[in-house]
Length: 424
Image (cartoon, rainbow, N blue to C red; front, side, top):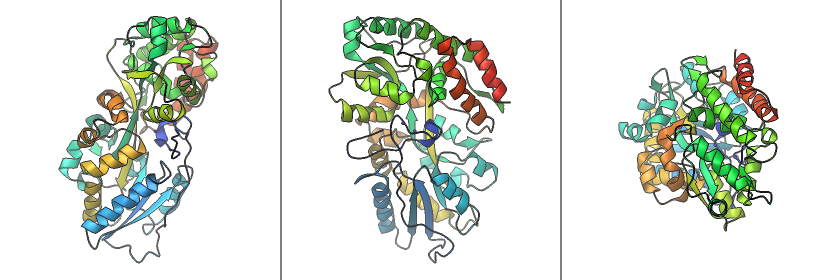
């Protein structure tokens, strides 16, 4: 969840940018054999699986799923999995078409949003499609985020969170001894780095329309804020205002890149990779981008600074879910998903896709993986968008359009009030 590597193009977690690619990556359209009403193999021993493409190439999404399915079928004679892959640009349309008939509805779907399907009673509860051991292995925060009205319906596939990336060479030149833990320390460090001149910016603050809601959430969450309370969207709150005012303080200190209100995240990530920005909030694929584009860059990661110094971050996950239909395939689905979430199978999938494992066993398997080493500690402190709330889409759109105006002098309180109004 927004990503390029030398050997393939990666597609991010879909909700991370709400339809945009993580950093710079775009989806590669790949389709395997489809399934539908004419499939004679659609029996209780056959799973029809619809999934998106995250990456291309010899170890990309198709190759990974093909290998997992081949191993599963070899270990379970008589069981079969029909895989259909679609690009993120097309998968939502494909899902809408397939759900028009039970005969074409997938048994397992990999996508971002699950709540509308769960609310319509279409999904199995997660407890019916994986073993208790798998459920207990999932990070609690991500399990809660995959739940509706107290029941978990989806299985997190993998995660993306944010953490502070900082240029250690610029820190040394500016006399900054350690990464900041609080906003006060962040502003002071950014100002010192900005003072180095030569086109260097202290902090990359992307409040352009690409993904202002992501950067803003890091700051509002860092003040103890949230975007919802129960069923209500809560934008205009004292805690959220503290977070937005902290961004404005950083801007007023001239410690960011020029024109932060119109800067997209991909631009500050690229500037960081080029050594022109002291600090950014980065994602798991940022590590691969640095390795591909500027492997000599001297950088490190640290928890995202907050108002108090207590870590918190933004988390996003895509999900696996299973449609009940007539209930004939429960055991077959359960066998496949238990196979997928076994530690070695799951860890290999996550490693090659370049994200963060959401199972404890997967994290243990990948303890030395660069992405896991940098991001695993962020999972327990991740907070989420209220994606299950139907009013969130309007609020999110308003954040993307309005938040950048604080860089042109707009009052943070008035900006939040306008966003709150848009969410009604």
